[in-house]
Amino acid sequence: MPEIKKYAPAIYLEKNGYEGCRARIFLYGENGKFLGTISFHDAGVQPPPTGVGANGELFASCLFGIYDDAIDLLRHEGPVFYERINNSTRLTCGQEPAGEAET
Image (tube, rainbow, N blue to C red; front, side, top):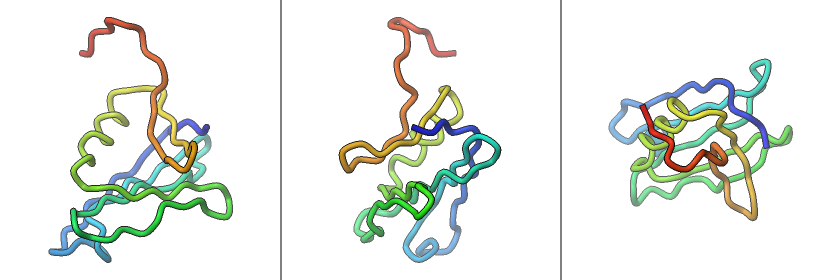
């Protein structure tokens, strides 16, 4: 499971986004290796299927409503990983100590 070292968010400002996509987060690993993207779509828009690229990159699509949650996880947690398990693609930060206070 690759660790995300950097990310680049993009919000598309056109009325219908870019080809139906409202925003994307581009994810990068060690030495700037491209890990994949998460595309965010409005409800009612048929997003492209989640897939895996020729070099193992992950391409996920989800509703725009969780965009802020994804950005929050990338900004405030660490390490953060991008993985695909049992046909499900996810961002995860792994285990944290119980009772950890967020600052």
